[in-house]
Image (cartoon, rainbow, N blue to C red; front, side, top):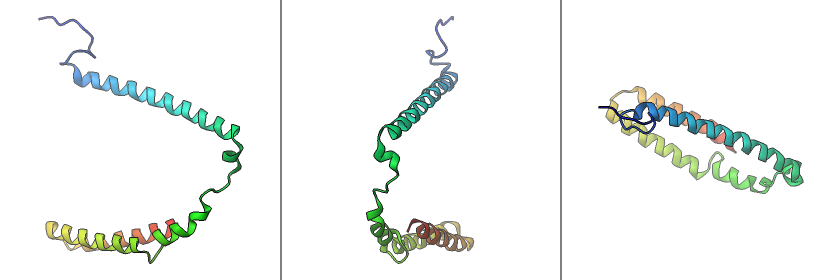
Amino acid sequence: MSIKGNALNIVKGRAVASLFSKARENRQFKKFVKNGGLVLISLMVAHPVLAAGTDLLSSQQTTVNSTFGSGSSLVKWFYIAEIIMGLFIYIKARSPLVFVGIVMAIIFTRVAFGIAS
């Protein structure tokens, strides 16, 4: 039985054809990124407000610090969620090393929220 056609159109060769279609999508994405970068640079050169470097969100700094800073309620909810998830994982795994992971997660959260505020 002879089947005429392209490997991209045949159902049997779909695994190979999917590799070719993904490569084609990657080329299109690279072209889009390259052209988008050129558009962004030309926009920054053409529009002086974007090129000036003024911080438009400087008035929101206190809001960010009160939401994400140390001592905020969001940080406390993260700690509670980490402890509950740690207990759940301990019940499933029965390994005391899970509690070391909880301490590491709390330290990471403290550092991350310290950087954010």
